Image (cartoon, rainbow over all chains, first blue to last red; front, side, top):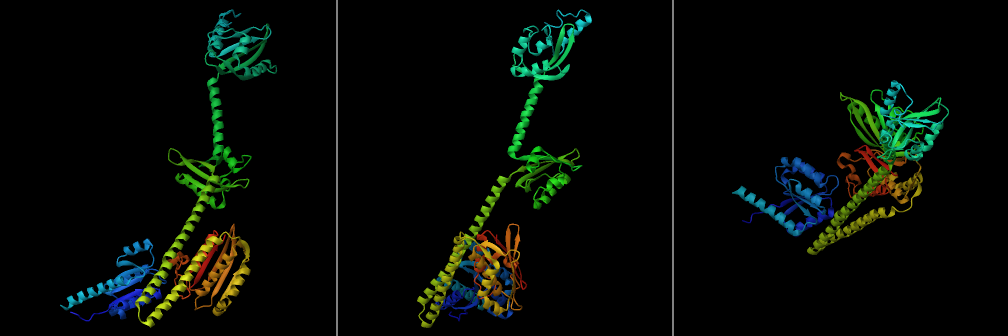
Length: 147
Length: 493
């Protein structure tokens, strides 16, 4: 039953370099089977997602910060809705922010395609839960595919 | 004694005449100055509410009992008037039997016959008319006082001739002493220039489309008093629904309007301050939280990590968070300082001298970019302002223009001042990379908003600049085109 597990592909979009470092370190520490790709703003992420060369490496989950220069989280969601149909893969999105402004939270919850709003910094348990859940989903899918 | 009884008329015709006199709906009286003989017609008694002969027909009765004492001098004067046989009818008050004093009017005529000088006259009751007249005069006085208290004047425009007529009170509002005839255009020219077309259009559409109007406009009287007035007009239509006349009022509402405007500006000030507070709360919430969050995050990772190399890296991040935290606290201090420094004294600042100082401070940056800076403060060389603010504003704008210059061309930065009525403007332009206004708009003045991937961008400069300008009652506006440049228009005062 113990088949080789594919790593969960995680995409982090955040201009905060320290947070990105912490995020990666945390996944390593927790021993999560994941591979983290980091972008400093929405624009860089959109460009990468659009690039057909990356078609096979599309992320399973995106952690998206709200406040970023060039293209912020809200604008990213807008752009993402346009390219979503062409991706051919369901990507779960969590919005991340240190903002405790209720307006931001309501606004995020209203956007279709946003799984949840997570307060920064994300804790290890929460992250493990999300990654492990995705892992399970993939295994179920793979299992079905194989049988 | 009546005319028809014991009179010397002997003929039937004379008797007939006497009967007419007694039955006429007026009182006839006659007084022979020579013989002191006095006669009243039946009508005379009846007018006063008596039966003929009920009261004594005598001078004494008339002057001491019937005639109101205040009217006695005028009546006597009329009697003794020797100038002409016919004097003007006289209005007097006489005491009636049951309903007090009434107003009467009497003619006074004179003639001489063989018996002597005779004065006679006819008396009619004018009480109702007189009462109405007094009431009308009273109403008129109240009306005048009311309009005066309300500071309200009226006018009328004849739609066919476009002729204008103004009430006395309106001339008072215009402060025109002799009531010169004004044409419509002349009347409109008393409104302040920016409101003339407003009132003109309103009157035109009242005449053309029967549209009523109600406006608040600035008005300048003949004596140069500027005041707010309410101008209201309603069209009067004919049977075919066409406007024939426009009736309007103009009311001096200066005090109330100024108070309202004062309230509005306080409200705007409060709204601005509230927005600044919200911004402040937002940065405390967002920015400090993100630093402290990161700090907690790193400390936790530090605890959980066993590898020394990893620990060293985590610790270096802790150091940089500590630096960021102190920078953020400095920024917060700057923002708080804006509010506290506002009470500092303003001094007269020379734009040119101040700008030259800033240029020398940024000399190396300017030379490195080979930037051209054109200054023209000839239109308004000085301003009374808080020096620290002005320095900060100019330095921020200049630093921004240098930071966001387009590497494809030599930076050209222009700064000039303008004076318009009571306002002083500072215009600051560059040919830098510009900013997508459609996308960012006024966000560029927000806190910690950065739009370019410039490592020096902190997102605090324009926020502080706007706060300083607004704290002193000014405004800042931005126009920008990507790859062309950016222009800031600042109303300083």
